[in-house]
Length: 72
Image (cartoon, rainbow, N blue to C red; front, side, top):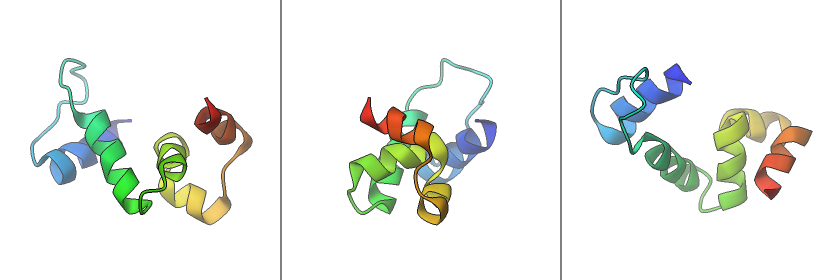
């Protein structure tokens, strides 16, 4: 998602990220590491946050498709 790409670049990687350029690497890993820290080490919660959005998971719980995503 472009907004997540910009957040990842600016906040996590501390550099601009061209979200249209798929050759730029590290953003996904950096974002997942950020989510694991935000989830206090709860990896399934972090993965759910990666898929559904951490705020949404915390406010609404995991949706059915998110549960399937986390399980796989």
